[in-house]
View 1 (cartoon, rainbow, N blue to C red):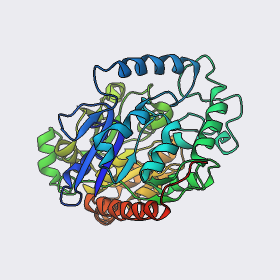
View 2 (view 1 turned 180 degrees about the horizontal axis):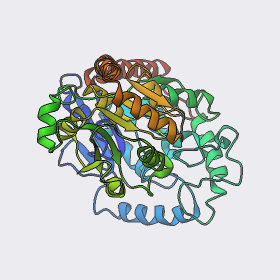
View 3 (view 1 turned 120 degrees about the vertical axis):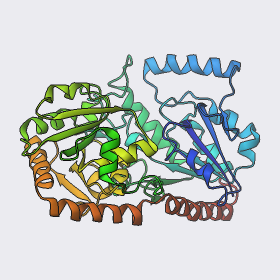
View 4 (view 1 turned 180 degrees about the vertical axis):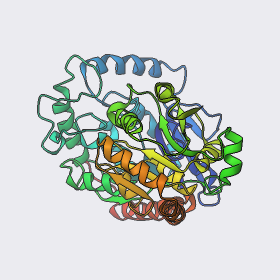
Length: 420
């Protein structure tokens, strides 16, 4: 079975954009990728269009021009070039991922591509069912056509408040003419697909993302804290921070900050912050503030294992991979309601969910878990079991193999699909 993944890039997000599937050579004959931005040195990853080509130069400038107007993922030429490529010809299945981050693949090409090959599309965020936004917040106009005026335009453009209305209708026409099989990682996303006037007519499968349980597994808290320079008698609160201002609309950082101000530690407590963390320095000396910078793999597993709890109070989240990685390291998670996260952590089994944007409730949940060692240990064990049972990478691969076999059989049984 030959699989061709199509995404904006390869290494960034490689655990869920198809790049990591190249490790499963015993399951597939061939796994390749077509991307706009190639970072790895893998010979199985191809740039589309090729580097230094006139087409690539023209496409880059065309996308910039149309982006200023507000057209969303309509101008990319990748869909025209793909059928001429040898790696496309040998593929049994096309698997689309984030085709809108830097749109080298126009959605206008989907009818033709899905006629030529079985097409699976993992819906990583709600963009596919909106007029252009990746997260709709409190707006429900995606259910009725994104009628003017859009309150949350995705990018700045001349007609930013009005183009979503047109883009939504273009998507509707395209999807009606396309033979697509959708994949979502969470029940929250599946519910949105089933409500979407654009996508609900298409078959949709729920396949949670998988992680490497040989990397993300419980490690000695004592050893991990010594490695990180954390006092052994401290309680440790871990969370990710990529800036208090830049992602506050998505990641709930301001409510997290407020909760940490409200919470009064009864014992010495360390804030273990992944990535930026500069804005939280003001909480010292109430807490010992330790920042790790960007980490991944073994280093992230060590940090998660060192923590007593992991906070992920996102207000827009379609899955939440770090929550799963935390559970696999036997560290319970606290999340906000209203996203995919409560179901992903199987709240209240793998952690606690509290009302969104409620800093008081978040502070109370922190206190509850840090003060109650017995409860925290119970959730830690349950969290690890959930990760092992639901989110292993081999299970993620096998679920996709089953799906690929099904879509290939369905595509072949239909023969040549006629474009309406």
